[in-house]
Image (cartoon, rainbow, N blue to C red; front, top):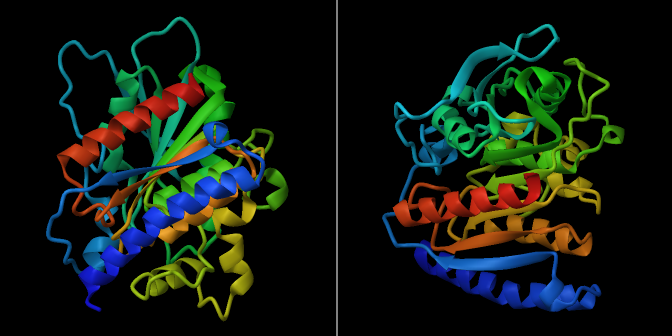
Length: 339
C-alpha cells in the first residue's frame, strides 16, 4: 500500500472512530445529545502533501499561521508592549502583549504559544495573532520559552506555567480577569497549551520561575495539531528524534519522563475545556493522538471537541477555507468559555 492509500485508509478509520466515540459516550453514562466531547469532521481540499521532515516539523514557525493577518487600521486602538520580562529565574524570559481599547473592567486573557518541535520559533511569530485577539476584546500575550536541546523537558512546561502565573500576579496592571485565561498553541506549542490545561500544582512541574502563590492553570485550551501522548507507539518515525531531543533521550531510556511530558497523563474532571484541530494525514502528529485525548475528555466529562480535517496534514496544505473556519471556531470557543 502506498503512502496516499495508507492515509486514505486512516481517514476511514477516523470516520469509524467517530461512531465508536458516540457509542462510548453512551457507555460511560453520557447521553449522546449531552456528550461532553464531539467529533466534527471536515473534508480538507487536496493539495500537494509531499514535504521534507524538517519542513513539516517546523511548519508552525511560519509567521501568520492559521490566524490570518489583518493589517491595523487607523481605527484600531490596540496597545502593544514588547519584550516584557516574566521570569525571575537565572534566564530572563519575555513575552509580547496586545491590549484592547479601554474597557470598563478586567477582561479575559489568551496566551499564544509558538511551535517548532520545542527547538525553534519565537514569540514574535504571533504578533498578528495577539492583535487579532485584542481586537476581540481580550488581553493577549505571545510568550517565549527555553528551547531544546540546550534546555530539556520540563523547562518548556515550567516556562509556560510561569508565564501564566506572571499574568495573574500582574492582572491589575494589564486589566486581566485572572479567573478567565486561555491558551492556544500550534504543534509543540499546542502540547504546552494542553499541559497548562491539565496539570495541577501537585504534579510538580511548576518550576522556580517566580510568582509561586499564583495558579498556572488555564480555563480553556485550543490545540492546533498538538501531540497528547509522547510515550505512545503511534508516534511516527519522523517525530521520534524530535521528541527524543525534547526529552533528552529515547523512550526506552527515559520512559517515566515521556509519560510525565504527556498531557494525556494528567486528564481529570477538573481540567479546562479543549478544542482540538487535527488533520488525518498529519505525518508528524497522527490523528490517533487527538482521539486518545478526546476519549479521556469524554470519560472525565470535560467540555470540548476535536475537529478532524480529512486529508489535511500538519498545516502545510491547509487552505484559506480551513484557516478561516478554524479561526472562527477558535473565536467562538474562547467566547463561550472565557467571556
